[in-house]
Image 1 (tube, helix red, strand yellow):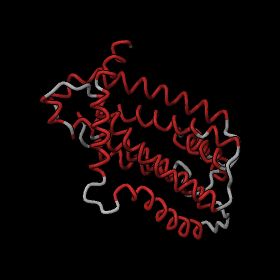
Image 2 (cartoon, one colour):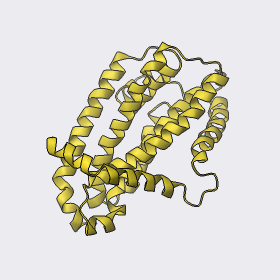
Image 3 (cartoon, helix red, strand yellow):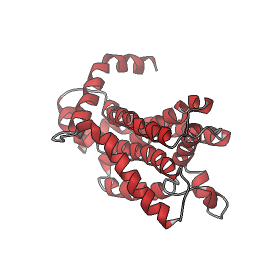
Image 4 (cartoon, helix red, strand yellow):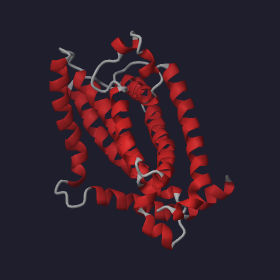
Length: 258
């Protein structure tokens, strides 16, 4: 553990440069640049509110806030894990030339997507004010699901980065899995009907849904579920342990397959 900490400190400058590089590449040749992180969720929320509000005959004035909060968290998780999946292979040229702790490529992918995600939260809080959903003491706990979201993305990212080196088709398989996760995270609908049906376990045991649900409750002035907090925390911890152990065990073989 002490060696890992020293190793991380020794390469923190490189991590910062990788994060900056990732942000620049994401918005390369874009006129609006990082402003797209504000415009895209606004436009998407407007479209989804019209479509799913009409489809489900939903007249709840807070429905746009429900959609936007879920959409932002899901979009970060999707982008971060997809970038992590390709992190080792996309940096193959550097890995072959110089020694760099390989987990930095995964971590930098998570961090720069997380920074863009945090910027996009400005839109969420702006919408909350417009809809007259004002801050309460519960908002002070919103950092808990946000931290868990980052850690979950890192744990899953480490697993995907390892698998992606040896099994290239994982990139296509993961896109399908993320579509399933999207519909199982109650982004476009209220979860009450599912939780009261025979398919309740789909949401209950989906850690991303639990994180999204906790965050939604915090911004809407409600008390988060203790089950959600404990389950999401436990699942995230196990995922990080498995991901790091799997990555460390296989990283010496990366050079043979990239």
